Amino acid sequence: AIRLAQRLDGEIICADSWTVRREADIGTAKPTAEERALVPHHLLDAVGPDEDFTAAVFKRLANQAIDDIAARGKLPILVGGTGLYVDGVLYDFSFLPAGDRGERVTLNNLTVPELLRKIRNLKLETRGVDMRNKRRLIRLIETNGSMPTRGELRPRTLILGLKTDPAVLKQRIVNRTDAMIEAGLEAEVRALAERYGWDCEALKGVSYAQWRGYFEGHETREQARQKIIKATLDLAKRQRTWFKRNKSIRWLPAPVNLSDIVASITTFLKT
RNA sequence: GCAGGGUUACUCAAGCGGUCAACGAGGGCAGACUGUAAAUCUGCUGGCUUCGCCUUCGAAGGUUCGAAUCCUUCACCCUGCA
Image 1 (tube, chains in turn orange, green):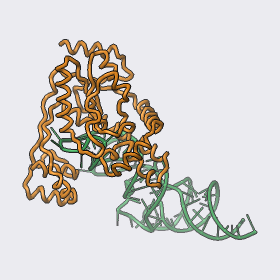
Image 2 (cartoon, rainbow, N blue to C red; image 1 turned 45 degrees about the vertical axis):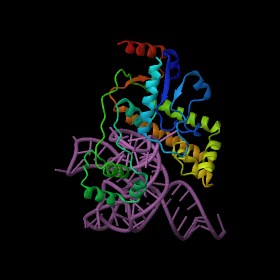
Image 3 (tube, rainbow, N blue to C red; image 1 turned 90 degrees about the horizontal axis):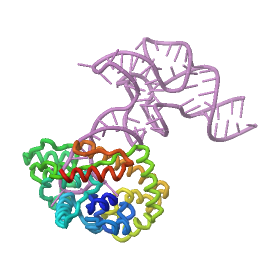
Image 4 (tube, rainbow, N blue to C red; image 1 turned 135 degrees about the vertical axis):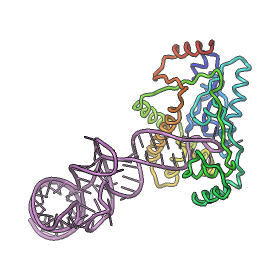
């Protein structure tokens, strides 16, 4: 993406629910200072380690960034990551109003059967909602049964997807994990845990949560490493499932020839 | 050599005569997803021509209407005594 941005006079918007968080750098594989110096990156470090952040907020900020970049005559390049964040921007998700924090805590203490009873009593429309998923039930109550909407694909948008060989991807994930550990991931996790506690948002992510057993003394570093690799693999799987169903994505087999992509994007932008 | 314990599907591990293709966990595979999304949730995981049939529970025999479950022998592993 950086090289594309350099060739196309573009700027990058990180559509990633984790790189938005300050103080979580190594474990989120955040672009380095050197990389950011090459091309402007937007929406990195937007919130603190223990602050709430949502796809709806991301959408708003991303749209602002896109408008800003376009107004300066540059090419906005959305890169990521987090399927919901990407689609929220590309398909103009409506994102119903946020729920009340206090009420959410209350609802969270209820069991699934209790939530179902409450929903029945409120006579809420349940079509399309996964009635076995507690979070969806809570959300259904919070939004009083209204359904969110989505629009058509944003005009003049080209979606490219990189298709990597599974074996290669796995090896890269192992390498990436080792590189993070080498770069001081343990110290980063320790600092966050000491300052914000294990319940903070930043420590709930992959490459972070897996250290807990080690810090509590009942697991080894190697176990933490293995758990990170597994969690990353699982995450990659979910990302693949998410993007797989998007028929508008043009899949490119990796490794890809940069000039070819630049050429096809240039052609696309002219039409 | 003698006395005990063990051998179950990819792995670990239940089962102790029928309701067992065999609990559960892990792993694997597939899927859902609109203000927590690196989250949360779901399905499948012996084979097949899949509302049924076939082949499985170390191996080979046997008992029984019926066995992963009982008996015999053999193989390998563990423990105690020699």
